Length: 353
Image (cartoon, rainbow, N blue to C red; front, side, top):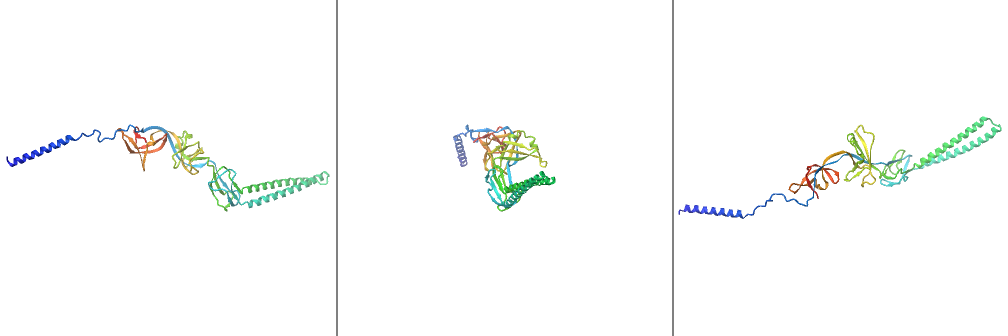
């Protein structure tokens, strides 16, 4: 046999051996699982809830400020230096409690002068009465003319009038003296102290501010387009800045006047006595006024997942697997639900914790 023929035969045998080895290895490989490449089977214990369209109350949120229903500014009614403050901001007071004192020396002198004028008028009245009685006897005895009697009678009437004037002046001085002591006009809390010790107080100058913390209200300006839809103002709620919980208003009053410049009307929502800590006059709030009904996409608030600045929910697909999806939610709609603004459609199911 020629060498060329032998070489070709050997190469052919080698190719056949490699092919046989490949076939044997391919047949020995186990079959691939039919579930490879698919999601894990559904968890039968997975708790889910549906995203659904629901008719909910339509609410207009009006910016508001908390103010006291009963408040007072205690001002000076006489001139003088403030000699003492008995309270400061934050102190609780009762009606009639002494708050501050103004130097009473000037009013004391007026009281003394009033008492002296009363004594003088009383002495003049006594003298006029004696003169009248003497003249009356002399007239009976016809020792003096009728004109003298008339003059004595007029002098007596004048003395009586002067005594009444003197007593009124003394009473006025005593009243002014009482203004040296500033007392609380209500039960409440001292809001601010507006003057310092030793400062000159003049009539009308405010010295202290007080308010009753048990009677507060939220005051909001509502535009006329929303006011026309306001149907059940008694169901209004008040939300406070930085707090999730809301408080139901015990009474809502729509003032019978409008601001022509802002085209709005003031609405007052009276609050209950028990309020969250830190709710004081001047606190920012929102008055939530029901203005009708509307359909909104809602989901359970418990299904909302927050990862830093990302808000999402685990959406359960048709294969039973839960996948995290970014969504955007709005305000709470009550009953443990929240409005869905974007990221979900009605009918989809979300995983509950």
